[in-house]
Length: 137
Image 1 (tube, one colour):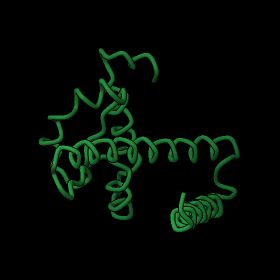
Image 2 (image 1 turned 90 degrees about the horizontal axis):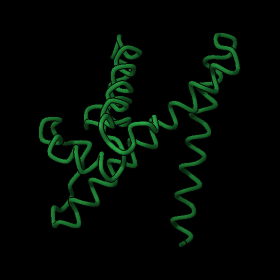
Image 3 (image 1 turned 60 degrees about the vertical axis):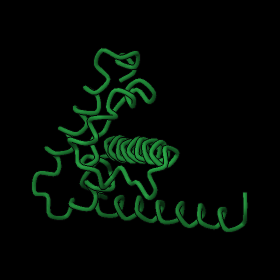
Image 4 (image 1 turned 90 degrees about the vertical axis):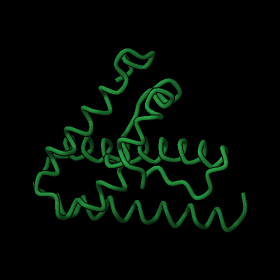
């Protein structure tokens, strides 16, 4: 691993640590410790699976010759074409509009963010119905 890659990973880790600490500071006293851990771990898991599936689809499209493809920018209806492949390969599917990066971009103006997140999580869980990963959720 090159020094530049190591430095980038360290910067990302530092930014994530700062973000988590800021959330902790904002919520201090409002949420008990266990609930906070559940909230943070759930958020980190959601971010991870969002980035994981986006990278998987981006790589698939780039390898097929589609230059500069970005799943996060794709229309949800068009994304449905890869739903089954994602469920078969990854065990779940997330619509582009429901990726962590897109939800985060509109979070400040979303008055119903909690309801939206619940719907997204239900959709992710439901995407595995009838597949080999159905019982993993």
